[in-house]
Image (cartoon, rainbow, N blue to C red; front, top):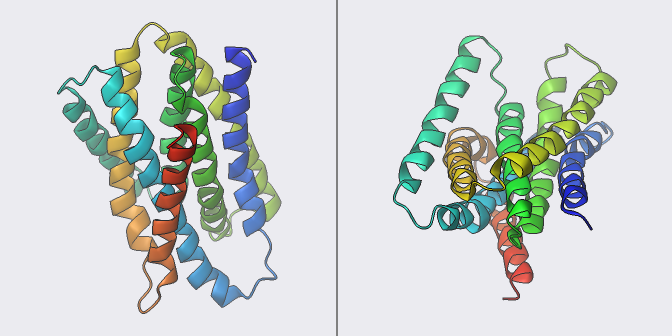
Length: 240
């Protein structure tokens, strides 16, 4: 398989999990109270756990390695967190604050760029990152559909069409990373670390608080399961 074909396959497969998650969420025959409480919070926690796993297992280690262990990694992580904070506040001031939708888009783009860059460098972490993106896009797509549809401004069909249109962002970002970062591994590392800082901000600002339910154990266990999935993927790819 050529490198271009690999990027398209990885990013399209990961992106397709966005509308797939939305499609699953579109079924209304599930008991509504259970769906909105236990299931929704557990799915949010699952996505948060996978996001945390992607940061800890792929993005930060690969980012630091691409920057040859430079201490400049720290400012990029901090800068990512600060930038995502500014974006979130700006969206909130304009009354477009949608944590799940924003989180899905803000992590999908830099991670897709990282896939393209990792493929160009021949890194074995590229398929693992694609797998983790897909796994996190599934619960994020589920919750993004519920979030968008709850506004009552669009039908379920239109919401799903919007989510399908988001799939194309991944291949475009992946190819951009491939062509722009093939000869600039330090730049790829900076993007991965920048994304890591932003994702950590989103996890603890938006995703983790939404996942908590009083006297319920499933949501926090969902986060543990999500992180364990990421760890398993890393061990499987690396033969651990």
